[in-house]
Amino acid sequence: MIIWAIDGAALSLEEGYPIRLVDFSLYRYKGVKCLSELHLTDKFEQGYWERQAGYCKTGKIKPKRYRIVDLQEHRFIDGTGEVTDF
Image (cartoon, rainbow, N blue to C red):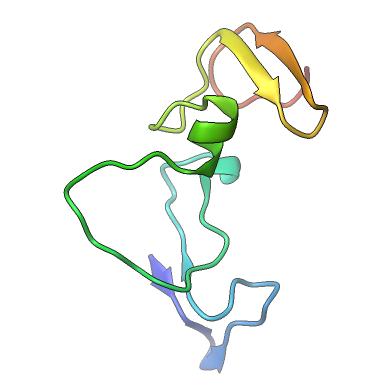
């Protein structure tokens, strides 16, 4: 969904002003927080987290060694799905 207003009022900065994209198929870390431009293409380009931490382009967690950006270290994540504790 592309959202630009809630109940007739423009989004606030905290809600993702000026436009917010919500993709319910992705985990929250993959969710777009705010849109300032929208480019449509048929070519995949890596996003920030795919480049920085090696995350899968589909947003699915796979067992492997990941760079934990907030902790500035690498750790092995054993399991699939959403990571809530490591």
